[in-house]
Length: 530
Image (tube, rainbow, N blue to C red; front, side):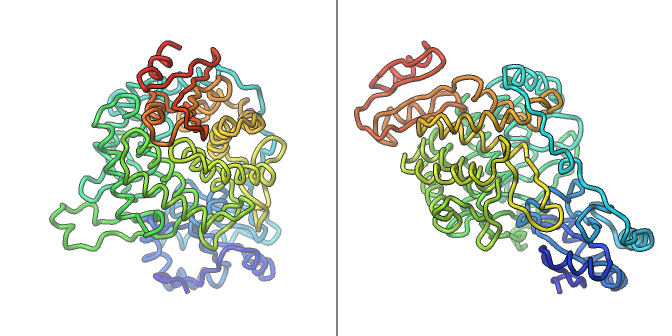
């Protein structure tokens, strides 16, 4: 019996689908999350109603998943938000579904599905799983140009951000714009700092339900906070203004206090009425629940953000926490073959985990120590061997229901390609760059249909089509020369620690190799004159 409900939930796996086939019943899949306020409401109300529970137990096989712990199930079955209640055939195809439902609405849907579904009825398969032919095409500058136009056209001049609906922070879109349409990026960061930041307890809320950044959805999720922190850090890299450094630093304080588990970073902090209280009222209340699960993907994104903040500020606390969290991930969630575990006891080899751990390692190799190149290669090689199919990458291995249908996620492919681009330079192995290019080509034929939410695709393409700025440092990590390289105002650059101690820096770009130079000022001049 699941706490706070009257439903005898089954765990995700083959067994409940076998049970559904044997009983000739449809499956009721409930997708919830520990940070989700409406999920908790539905548990307290609809799923704790005796009549609803009786209807479910009589006519359905109920499965409950945590969306954070089962991202591949979430990506195939979510109805666009949480909670999602999805009715499936015993083969896992979708009959119908909805997001939050009040008790009477759920009873009505239960009755309708019970009356209309028969064992001969098939369900539907989401389009992303039906369309196995990817829109492959060549990569060129038109992809970047199209996205620049999208960013300019969709920008909300009145309120900041992009679009005229709910406002998500879109940190990777901000980073794309910082290099190409900086005013819109900075305006959006100011709106995020004004509206999404919790000035009392710290951390950023997940999104705003309205165009003007009102109607806040007050959950605080680690990957959202880490990515926003990185975006503010990138803005500080370009501007040197404290109004962008301070939100990043305050976010790191939240991550290293409220979300710090002692070894790494907790996955999320729940929403709740607590956040609507005045600061003096909060003092007497218990803060919302923190899910202390350490997820490989989210913690790695936080490591990446902390490393980048350290690179531009010399903040030793950020460096220490990044090193500790990365050590925990490598020691407990990555095996010697390079397979990453989603969390302790969770699924292994998810593309999301492989990509983000790889990105954390390539970032750490540029900023902290070149020793991280070795595990980065191990993770990359396992990922290419086990997740690459015909040039694209699938999100994981086969499993029950629709998990046996491959899904090639654009966002995660972009993150992987970005990390492979870094690794190719760090290892001088051009094969990694070729793999990244081929993976990005898998989606190039659809570039003219891409909106601002996937602007990082264009960023990754730009780094593959053009030669990224590379700065080779033959000096110790943390030396003046190394620090100067890290602070060059180009967040798409790659800094290579050669392992030598000659006190020299060399610059490589599209025009070729220049240098070496031996002082930070000379390095800056060399890049400015290039």
